[in-house]
Image (cartoon, rainbow, N blue to C red; front, side, top):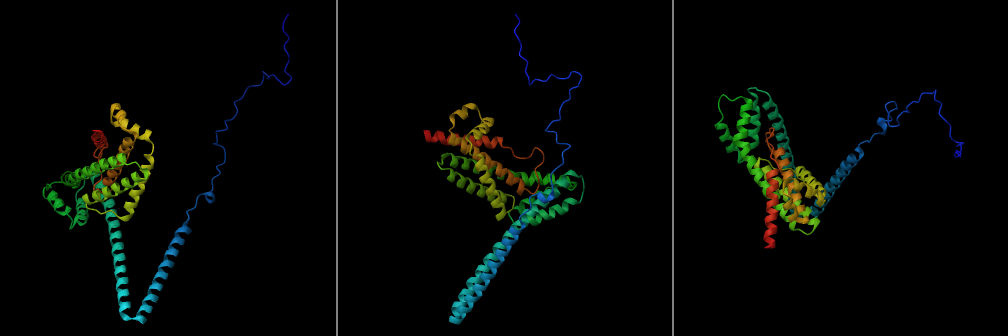
Length: 330
């Protein structure tokens, strides 16, 4: 006896004469209207900048008014008090003026470096004659009355007479800037190792950040001095921001261990503690910041394949940490 099949009352059979069609994809938005309007875009908060400038101007006016009123009060009391107060105010204004002059002077030097790098890149790409003189004049003005001036003169004294613009810059690169690069790389390597060791033996994360920031700022100052510059306040603040960002990225021990695995053997990774691995990772980031500072301060841009690498520095950082921990264990 055959089993009886119950008929589903909700089942509707398909009509075989009707051809099936593929429905439109919901993810295909080519024919949909683009609901983007300039009125909905994020507007810059310009009123905040204007308000800050207005508040600063108001504070300045109030400070000047209070200073004049206090000077008038002292002058009515005794002329000697007013004279002393006037000298103090004049000295303060002089210090502020000197600081502002140096700040804008340092900014001008960094803008000059950007222009030198741009011009040097154009000269190296084009085989021309005569354009290098203008570039050399700017470089001479930058190094005037600095320890780099005799080094530049010595390099130019060995320049062949038949050299064109590109050959002139290549000659300076070999005779002057590569020697400066060696000094900068030596400083970066030393500061990176010291930072790595300090962080590796430091038990506090906050202390790690402070030590790393302090060493990075000191390293930046030395690199700028090597290339004949002094860092401005904005450059130091930008570097400190970069340092804090890198410290946050270095918070994961697994990430740092992966980077160490690319540069060292698995045997070394197994013998290094997580704290030492964190120090090594932050040492790597310090070295990267130093190399970036070299690129910003160098009057000539690095050519292809000339940019300093991280391989040798990373091995030195790992070796220094390992030597320090072995010394402590002994």
